[in-house]
Length: 329
Image (tube, rainbow, N blue to C red; front, side):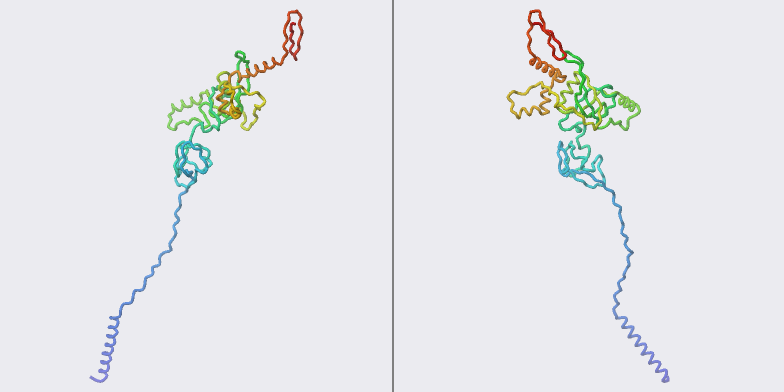
C-alpha cells in the first residue's frame, strides 16, 4: 500500500470518528420543549337574543281586605310577559273602587276582585229606586241608562186635593231602563242556537216596564208617594243643563214624625240630616201642598176682621180685592 492510500484511509477513519462523536452528542442531548401551539379562535360573534315584550300590570302593594276602598298607595306597577285576564294597567283605573274579596300582597288585581253591579255607580247618600214606566212615561222608550232626566208628578183630583202637575225631582240620573243598565246591555251567549236567539230578540223588543233612578236619601219618600198616588213623567234634559229650582223660595214640607220638644240645639240641627228626614217621612197632603194651603187659609182667617151677622134685615157690601160679599147686620 502506498503512502497516498494510507493517508486516505486515515482521513476516512477520522471522519467516521467525528461523525460518530456528533451522532453520540445528538443522541444524549435532551429534546427541546415543544413550542406552544397557538390556535387562533374565530372571532366570537355576540348573539342578540330578542327579549319578549312586557306589559304593565297593577299589583297589590300590601294586603287589602274586602270592603276597602282602593287608594293609590295600596297599588304598584310591575312588568309582566303574561298579563292576567281582566287585569289593569294603570292605578287610576282602580282608585276609588271597592274590593270584593281579600287581596294578598303582590297579587295581580283583576275585575273579578272588584265590587260590581249598579250599586257601585251610586254616589254617597244616594239610593237606587225602581219606578214603573211605559212608552209615555219613558219618552217613547228612548231613554237610555246614564241619561239625566227631570221627574214630573201629576196628581188627579182626589178628595180635597185638586188636580196638579209639577216638577218633583230635577236632574236625576237613570241607572237602568228595562233590561239595559249602566253596566251594559244583556249579553247574548256565544253558543246560543237560532231558537234561543229569536227568543232573546223578542225579549229585547219587549217595551221597558221599569226604570231605576239614583235619588238622594231625602228624596226617596217623595218618589215613593208620587209613584203610588199619581202619575210620573220622565223628561230628558241636556247633560250640561244646570238649571235647578231654588228650594229656598218655597216652604219646607212638614215631616210625619215631629222632633221631640226637649231637643238640644245640636239635636235640632241633626233633624235636617238626610237620614233623619227620610225616617221622619212625608205625607201625601204635604207633598201635594194641601197642608200648606190649609195653613195659609187659617192664617188669612185669623188676620180677617170678624163680622157678626144680625137680624135687622139690612146688609152691607164688603169688597176685598176682586171678591164681593154681602153681610147681614
